[in-house]
Image (cartoon, rainbow, N blue to C red):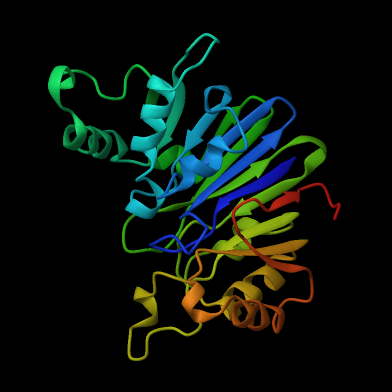
Amino acid sequence: MELTILGGSAAAPNGGDASAGYLVTSGATTILIDCGSGVVSQLRARADAHALGGVIISHLHSDHTLDLVALRYALQYAPYSGERRPVPLHLPPGGSAFLERLGAVFQSGNEVGQDFWGEVFTPREYGPEAAQDGALTIGGLTVRFAPMAHYIPVWALRIAGGAGHSLTYSADTGPQAPLAAFAAGSDLLLCEATLLQQPPGQDPAEYGHLTAAEAGRIAAEAGVGRLVLTHLWEELGFDRYLADARAHFAGPVERARAGAVFRVDGGA
């Protein structure tokens, strides 16, 4: 199994990067996790969008969803010699209504009144029961969900491939969520680390993001093999993020940046 970073920026893309977007590949199966600003350009440089086995959205903030519009146009209009088929699009609860509103913004001319998404996606929601207890199988990958703590409902993903190897993606979350338990034993933890310190005076129960130090502590508690920091602001200094996480986690710590590829099988 491989993880390819398409974007590791926070709410706005860093220079030369994109917002949240990640490819996970196992054998013939490739899925896209989140689709923020700039992700489709990175995707088209590295993979065939028509060959995606599915797209999974962790939550409905724009830095995780906005390039769904660009992906829709790529799938519908970019020259392609193969058979076009709708790509399964897995959304959190409320995602169908969100998608309808988003499509309505961009419909024009003869598209008005038509299903903006239907020709390229088969949208479906993963409900609360599936998000907490169930699993989603896409080709050779199995995806499990766990609710995290953010400003809107959000789900972390644990993705298993062959030979028992797995990676966990935190999505956006505060430190009060049970991320360490969900990620326990993962080969790789792709963990948001938006901050260097939590906002002073804010109630910890209301934290919606992690610091790099908190990400390091969670990785250590979970006993993961490797920590990859994502959802970062370049203005805060990538070296500082890495140093803060390494102070709490003894394993490999790297940052998510467009084009980086990580094996998820215990290898380098």
